[in-house]
Length: 162
Image 1 (cartoon, rainbow, N blue to C red):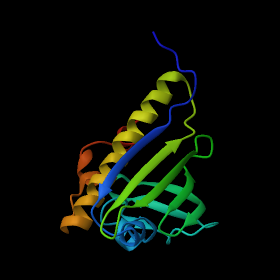
Image 2: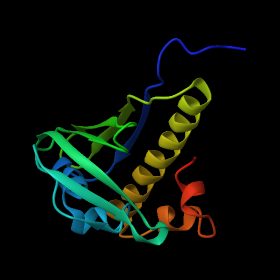
Image 3: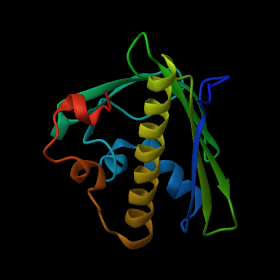
């Protein structure tokens, strides 16, 4: 059996065929983000601000501490339970006037090896779904509802991967 030498770092990436300003805005503006990820937010992402994100269909929420925002380039935040907070970073790379490469990096998972692996797999799947849903929304105007439809019959415990 292999043992982990460090906590996993999750990275998922996607090319979105829209200008960087539009892609960036989709993550900081809850009026847009709620069309492909969470259902409600207490506010827009701004450096130094704490916001609450809700997924009403699962009766769960997350407290998000926004650490840094570099317009059209980067968002850095911490989220999760007090004893199990992780860091999430979005990096936006403009590829000409009509394309943006988005990278999402999630790190700082805590727990035993089995828990670390479970959290990393859950984060990779979740952030990959978010990027796919964003791509469908911005490129084609389609709301996929992938987050809502991922586990329609599960309870909160199942949805959180615990």
